[in-house]
Length: 107
Image (cartoon, rainbow, N blue to C red):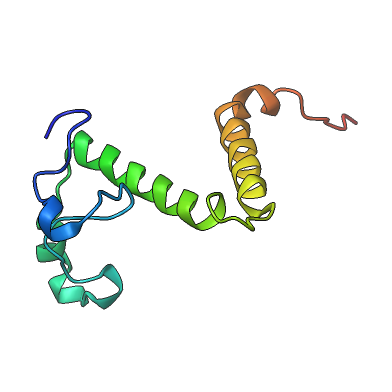
């Protein structure tokens, strides 16, 4: 699979219209159902490539959009979550600059 192509597991005749928020691969045990002894085998089955990470982030983005921004009666929740998330992200990447401007009481 390259950039801009459908996943290899996707079949239009079986799955219908393509949904970017859906995983078309073989279903596996949910993380919440994995026992401690089975965890190493479960982690070994994961695809850890940068492309797989990007695909997972893209699916999460589309699931979030389908839940909070695409409904007709969507409220302010999605916009508020995005705003707070971006504020936290930029705070953490600029923390070293903010740390230098703390107010200290010298005595």
